[in-house]
Image (cartoon, rainbow, N blue to C red; front, top):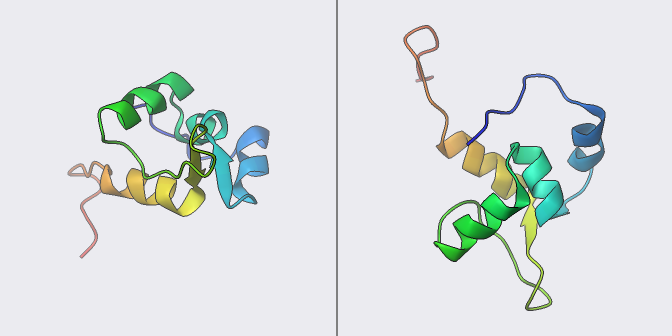
Length: 82
């Protein structure tokens, strides 16, 4: 998984105001290819998603943030918060 930069690019800033993101938008937000999200979904892991139409996947921004938080790596320089 590619780490997100600490700054917000214009594309990401546009996504933050949305509650639900398409797979493409979710991939941009996470810094992974949309096909990676599709593979994760097929393997039954990755961030939570909804299939309101039965075909296309939609991702809640809160679920993407929770997924990133669950996969946070803490180093000696940045210990986990108590």
